[in-house]
Image (cartoon, rainbow, N blue to C red; front, side):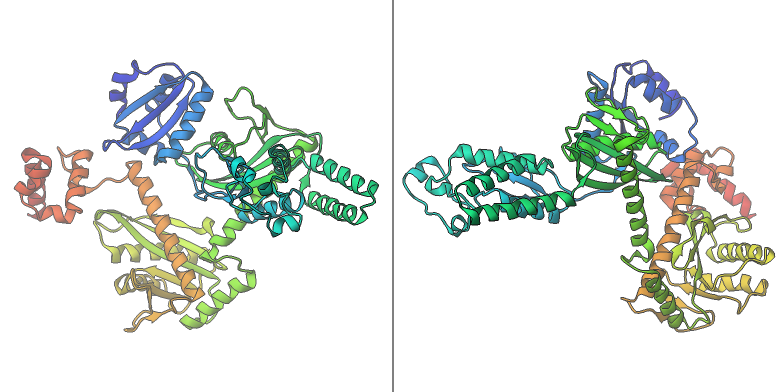
Length: 603
């Protein structure tokens, strides 16, 4: 949708709060947003020039717009969050968290059982959680059963069945783990009281349990039942030990949510601490991918709403590193300057930094838990496999990229000690090559890269990988010979599909063991150069910085040129087509212009 097209509908857009939905020409929902004033917010997309190519690309793809007016900003916030979760539009923030979280369910039945489940269904049962760790849930359930006798059997304990004496107590009753409701030895009221204690324990409030156990111990002691009193005392000791493991910040801090954020380029990490009764009962960190150059405030606002909904938070206060526009009027936003809340925020920030660093380590070589020494072993393994003079602590990899046979660009990525060195990555706009010529393009960019390093007297890589077959490798070696760098670094070709490695002049390739760490490193480098090159290519296409030969034909505009390229895949293919074939795509008059242009060029 162009700015002129938008102006025709701008006056129809309401000024009330609500959500807006952008659809593309196929009718697919590509973006959902919220606004205090729909008209003002939506107009901002079409009345200014965006520095970010992704936002520009979004606006270009909008075919029609729909609106939903709501009663308040809070309603808009909740509806936006719901629609993003349901439809996952392409240009909205992407939450990279597809886990199913475990719950503790209190089953809707006589004398309800409690157990772990990942399926939340509308059966009238009570679901506590969710929790971030199934192991933690099992530990909690085991802990609860040591102190609160609850049934674990699946018997249908209706009043009629109990009165008829249909059931008999089992071993759990004789072990003291159940009070025998199946034989009417425990009332529903007493059982309900035990379940309330469970709820309190899960909220971090252990005081009622302490008080009950201490009262039991004193009662046993007064009745001279010293063995039973000792058993209860051991439970109290265990409970105190469990409480000591919990992170208790302050009994006076109450219940609140704490969030911190770390944003780097298009990725953001948000940590969430759920604090109840001064105790941290949950902690969770998520990774988010931004799509439209969203600010830290916008990302944090989205994450706070999402996490509070996911974990069913009812906290009336949220602690943040900076103010955000959070619409719930009943929720207080606190940016602490000191005290216990500031300590909580610092703890959250430590967690988000740790999560990001751990994720980075996992992505290195796509392997988990590798120490520095183990990473070095991978490099030594690669050295041995390729017969290199020294370990390839500095590796560079080149790849060419084009779009439907047009717009060639190249990319180079650099790995140092097996880790991406992004400050050394380079993009190349091809300068000396006309049309699509992978060999000539590779020769140019390799020459430009190592001519620069040679002139600057900068250290050369031990290993250079050319992503392509023997042709691209041969072209790269022409530049290496012209620069007199033969023998000063090892240059190899990597076949596109077979993952075979070629040396210059060799007829036979080398195949690294399919399960070897060295092959995983080579794959990681190849995938990274593909990603980096494609991202650069998309960016340039979206910004409209590419101009192809078709657009230089008088009477042929960008839209017509794009139609031709999408249909015929390349300019070379178009040159071989007849006027009738081209006319089926762009019409007879424009087809004649194209055919006559290429005919004149051949004279």
